[in-house]
Image (tube, rainbow, N blue to C red; front, side):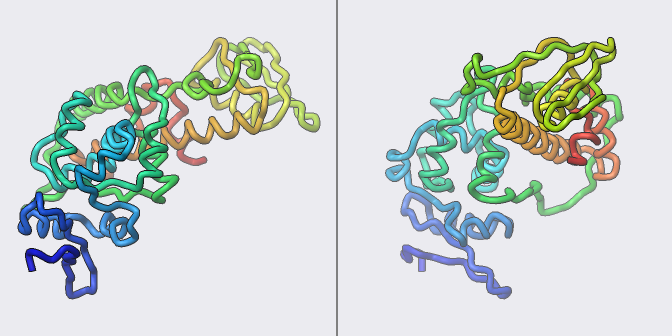
Length: 303
């Protein structure tokens, strides 16, 4: 019934798929919404973690939360599944486009949290939004775009692909550790270390750890996690770096940084598989990843 306010698409395998009931969409458009979403996304709908909100309801939501949600790879996937038009890059125009239709969103609590995310280098990082969404929604479904006729990706020259992936990751703006994660820690509560090249732990006595750099300069730190963070840092940068004096805070910001990198790596691999088969894409991603000032690809993802 096209006037049913709570329409559900049911399938023979007992999957129940919600159809948005708002009258602004024709029933055919609403039925399409119930058909095009892959199963992993429908699990979020069936558990009410994601649902359609009308433009009127969205007026009460935090604007930055809505906009930041659609900065995430998951939000962009939802939009592409239901809309032929791409979202404008300008945030004012983007909000106007979103407010034209009933739109799939997480709860207002989640959007409020997303609204409070701090920009890095003037921009909200998609990886940071995805990471916050995973805290609330669990592991986000990885959905690849599909078409009626499946064909193998057309392979490009390896050199062209490496250049393309390099440009892609530059646009994503890799987070800088620890600099981008110290904004709420006063300078008085930070300790600055200086070193040249790779650090090695040479001695541990209770909670006191001694490290040495490639010039044989020694650094003494309190806490094994603090020392391990410095060792990881020294694998891709040198000079002066500051860490929280509180080892527990170092653990928190380091894990947040690593999670953002893991999310970025997954998105980079997904992007690469649009051109290369999975087995060939992985080595290319590793090559591109290791060109940047980040922990070594294999070292990072063994953690």
